[in-house]
Length: 153
Image 1 (cartoon, rainbow, N blue to C red):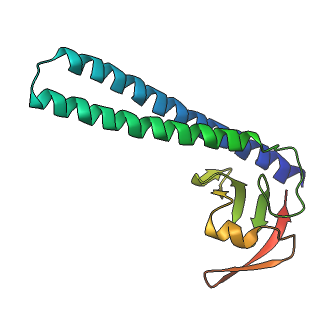
Image 2 (image 1 turned 180 degrees about the vertical axis):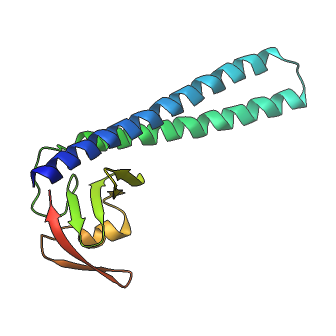
């Protein structure tokens, strides 16, 4: 159990790092777009100029929206306490099955740690919706596969 608890802490910190990187990337992109918009304003006038400004503005809106999403993801992750032991599948649980290892946090996909694959999945993912509330030794059927829960941390 201690091994799983240590792994959960490592996964939690990796999730924080990945979300932090996404936020930093979005902020950098937004800064670059602001700089581009400033230099575009100083360039020649005309239809080409207006089109360039409009495209930059659209990209700024898209990037700002993505930044907002990433900040909300970071807030969601902050609700997780990696030292808490869970007895059922819920937010913050590390779920070990006979086929998968899942950290219920946010949707970041598969990562490898210590030679093992772990799936970082959100509460809204279809497979996690099947697992929610389940306990050790329960079976979960998803897409024609049966998963036996071996441990929940």
